[in-house]
Image (cartoon, rainbow over all chains, first blue to last red; front, side, top):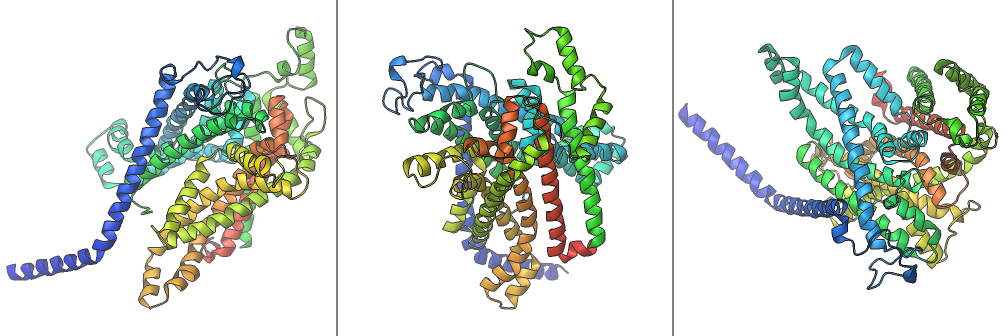
Length: 303
Length: 308
């Protein structure tokens, strides 16, 4: 009997070795790919961290005040005194972009937070309770999804009028159904798992089961979606600002800055170019991080 | 097939009704008085404001206002503009062809670039074309359209003078806005096709084909691609809807005529009937597109046809 086991083990080991040799080439390549995508995600995280610093303490970094109008330097192209040039009021574009980070990021982060919280709670409720609660919540989500996200955010922002809280509310509301669906999907998949039933059989309360067993397992797809959602929230926010529904303040955010520069395209390309570059690089970084998170947390798609 | 179509059409009608309630509720429930945005409260007396409110029917309860709106819509009456009393629907219909044209050309660009690069990217996985396609895909979904539009104007209109920067007459004016809008869709489609294709390549029937000794080219383009394209039809349909919404920004950037531009102007002027009208009209078109996509999906994939 023992010998039989021995042979079986040896055979399995042989097979494994063969497979390893054959795979070795591809494996090395894959390993290199993984390192590369990790490096990209690292760079992206560094960029996001840098922009967060910009948002927190712009006065330490920006060379000029964003409201300082240098009347002797109107519409200067990028140069040594003003790295990214000046606008038609003689304001320094670099300083405007750095100060604009605060409102742009604030819109993105707070609308994702609000959307994830509301969508997550609704989705969790629907998935865990099932029955009528599920039907009513999810049909409401379906109705919210009948209008393309951007348009819904636009309609809500138009009804509420310009202002930071209004913009955040509009973007968050438009993103709720997406988060709710993902959360519900995760929870419905978990509800019937053995360990959940065991916990319940041991007399655990609903709240205990949700907090200790369901949420920790359902949270990762929502986290991935929230990261990618941050990018699209920033884009929607900038778009609303661009259309004039943004915050009303002396320091424009990136979208508003772009919209102000539009009238000067033929004479000053730099006013529009750099705020747009800031938006794109932030969203690009967030998407890279989101892709990496998805590959790590959600192994189903071996992309 | 007929039964399936019937079910889908009825559920689409329900969805349209749902979106109508939503559009109406947004402007009814949210704070902000439309009357106060029409007249300057510093000059108007409380009586004048009240009179205007009665005249517009805004003093009625929610369900009566909604009923008025709904019965109007059923008669093809989307209300009149608060700014110049122009009827909303004829204005939308007059400007819709330009927007539809822009949406279709953008979707075409997105679908062609997206499918070609997505497939090549999956077939030559980890090769240079894969890297290139992934970079284009990532940039596509990360760039705001108003920025890529402005960059296109800077390069191709102002610097090179190849295409006009604004206007909506002639095909030349369509090129830059379609590209600006199409890049975003291409980004989504590249990523979707790539993932879908990679999933199909790992399925057992592909292994079987390989074991039979069929050439890799035939396996990829005859067998894998056909299966991978099924989910792509849905994504292209969804992108068509997103692009329709995206015209609000793009038509503003390129100063084009269209319903997106009407919406942007109406938002600026807080002209609520026009905003409601355009959003609802777009929702109808969006639902209609999804219906067509759903039905064509069933047509392409026999498994779906048989399941109902």
